[in-house]
Image (cartoon, rainbow, N blue to C red; front, side, top):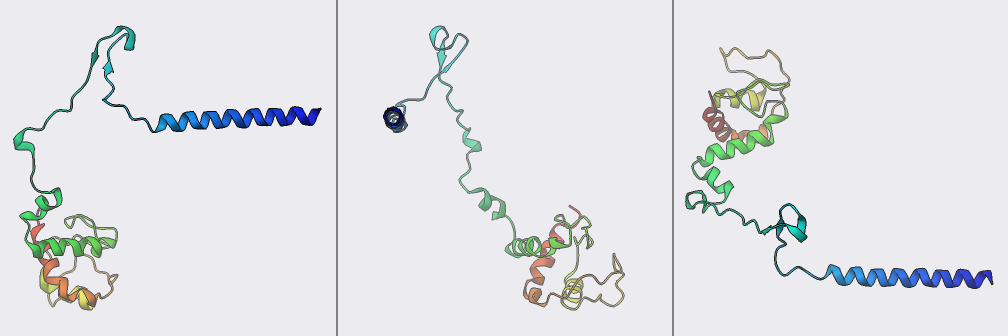
Length: 161
């Protein structure tokens, strides 16, 4: 008798679960035909209803270019490449803002191509140059040689900004 009662209870639970699953899945596939209105005080029963439309941008605010395009449209391609090199290599030791000192390396804004070639390729300083920091922490990065003119153009473009 006890086994029969457990079986009956289990069947009832499974049937209820199946009904709930069916009911929920049927409702999940139904989308509202129109936006639901926002109600003011009193809720749906007593308050006024209003649908809040999205504001339309003024014609002068509409851009025909993508943000990335608009940002780089007026930038010299050499400067853009230098910024990319700086962001992918130099900020490991230098600040994201080339005008500021980094955790390990000094600020690089305004660095000349000659200094970049000597320091980046050989970890030396040009004759007569007084370094901002008297360390030899930087390792030579000869793979950057083709990108040094672009890096110099970028660092010159941000000097004093």
